[in-house]
Length: 321
Image 1 (cartoon, one colour):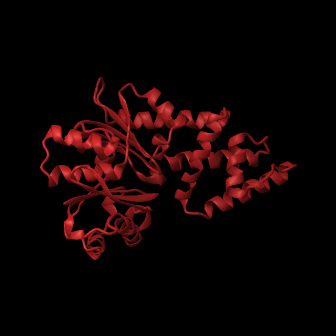
Image 2: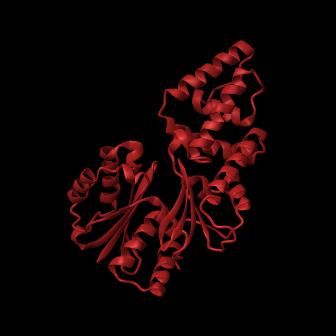
Image 3: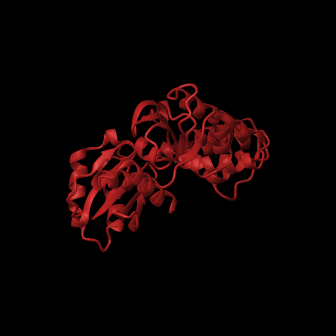
């Protein structure tokens, strides 16, 4: 018998098929499947793409259980999702849950602690017995997601627009953002009037794209901050403070349980991750493969593992040991 685990986010969808020993049988990736960001139809099509790759060459009847960790799960049209699932030949009923418990399990086999996710969006939760007990932020790009990839990208674009509008000398972050949005050959304007026109062009192009595409600018903030750009360093410091404040809203003072950091902003290294680590007065663990963690949760249920056996399987799946 096999188990399936899926980690479905706004940017990518990943599926892994494991046997009872934790050995990987299949793996698939696809574009994002967050139904709140993409709509259920598009989300389901992308998830199917990841599923089909993971199931390649395997009889779907051999899959005994599945857990799907999904950002934006509350927006899912379950009927559409279930039709997609059945169309792959899978007979097991999947457990569809939010991404908080999956992200926490991707960092630790402990039942209690805290998880902070900062990818395109940002959210934190206190985890009790493997489930979210208290949640902070996760309110979307328009009204929340403080310190997220989108937040970082928006701040970078805002900085560049204002700097160009004032005709200021272009710092590294402004230059990187202008090159990203206006083209690789961009050069600073010679006059204030021309610079203001560049600012307008940048704003028009940025606003002509889907808002969440601003998250693509987040790596530029890390790059500029690593090079010592003062404006980028200020954005990083503010983002880290916001993320640590989000954790503080769900974490009890003096807790010694782990804080799992998940999402591309925190797991890809760089200044934001370092600043968050320094700002958290707690043991910190970086999340591993979310799809593997989802498969581990499915295996615990399907194979009826006791705590010690579950810990061993967790180490095997997440660390290969």
